[in-house]
Image (tube, rainbow, N blue to C red; front, side):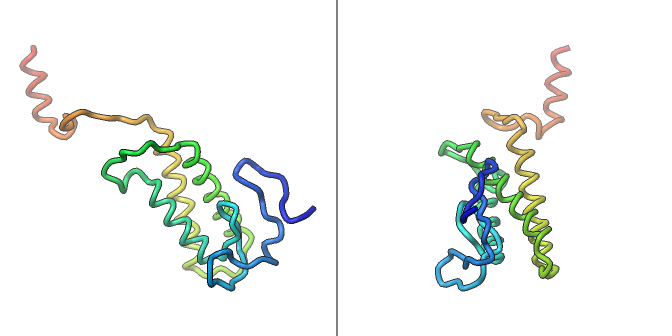
Length: 143
């Protein structure tokens, strides 16, 4: 079958990870999974997921001036969640901290899926939803 099998929409699936080392420089650990078409040990996989999820999470950013590639963002979030689930189900040697981190990644990715699906609400100027008393007073003056 070779080194790679058919793609499932989130990039090629590396089939012989057990024989490969982590692609991060100066890391001699065996690869646990792949992400962005790179073989990664569990530690580097977790670090990369956290870094990229933080980078694409709109809740942690004040404003975004550059255009966002939503398709690429969704593809990464999907791949990240699939790989985290795959690792958590296939690896029997995980400690509690590693299990917790994989679960955290799954939960964070699912939150981001919901955020990306929600319609974007933009307001110009100060938000009128924050001062409900002022909105009620303005509405009562009209009648």
